Image (cartoon, rainbow, N blue to C red; front, side, top):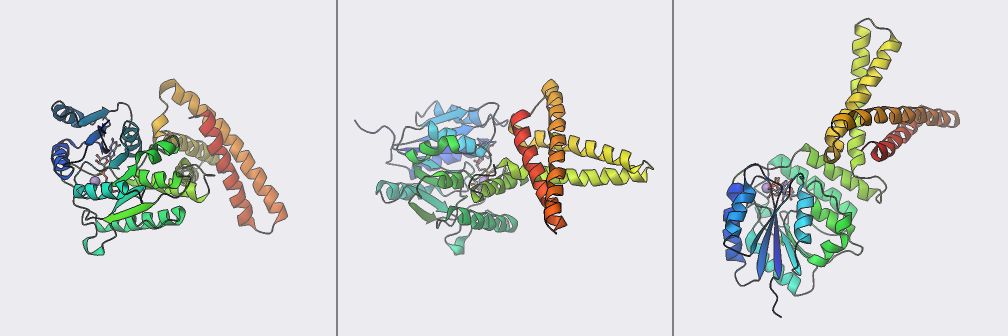
Length: 360
Ligand code: GDD
Ligand code: MN
């Protein structure tokens, strides 16, 4: 039987209402002669992107809209779109027209030829048209992100955090349960999760400027990415959330010192100030972790309150462990800083593991 669809183009969208129409027009042109479909994965965008897609889909069976409610995340959207496909090849492209859709037929040709599993659109291969859609800061950040990724992946791929690629669907399917659903590094994650290194071809393209709307890249996305690098660097020992959790812990130290200073300045005794500072820091750690580190499992209402009590109890245990281990190391080595660091790392690890299990 003839193949109904050879290529599924997955397009993650969040507030891209004015871009989806022009994108479909472009796909119709560049994929002329290919049996394709496009799967929009929209996270219930407030601007009504899904309604716009569905209005077009009513007249073209090649268009699909997977509208997710109660969830957010670029990576998860891409994975879900790919899992909805039955085609042998899956492409991923941004909705905002920053990626060059005319590359798609060439990517397809390379995969069809059978000498590659993955074709990546690279913003950095051809220096003369390097990514004019990026600000200088983004460009530098992107190069750093890529350099870190290459260390971990140990493959030659110039743009492993590209959001524009085509892959044999099997490769996503095989690793889907292991992929993170947050952040922008889904390609990196797919490559890093493969049991054997995939055969990759890279095709250069000029990263255009965004058409309508705004980018969803922010500091959280960057930390999320660094967390994943850390995970792969440690051979999956440290989970991706650990970096965020540790950063929140560091912010707690700052809160603690500020409160201690304020308490002393207000004329309170050292002991009283220290207790107030510790409780404040623990509370702010809990609230920030609940909002940021575990934003996808955020506690509300009564669960927030009981979670808070459990968090405090577990962190108190962590503090005891911290001091005990620091003392032990201090007795056996001449290095006070090693003792202090060993205690802090053990305490943080305990706090992370225990609260991940018992609070969130
Ligand atoms: N469903 C869904 N959910 N889609 C999302 C979400 C989300 O939470 N966040 C972003 N998107 C969609 C956007 O609507 C857009 O179509 C695409 O994902 C890329 O988002 P942008 O916000 O435009 O990203 P960017 O241009 O800043 O980043 C690009 O470059 C990065 C590397 O520097 C993207 O191509 C990234 O994938 C890439 O990693
Ligand atoms: Mn973009």
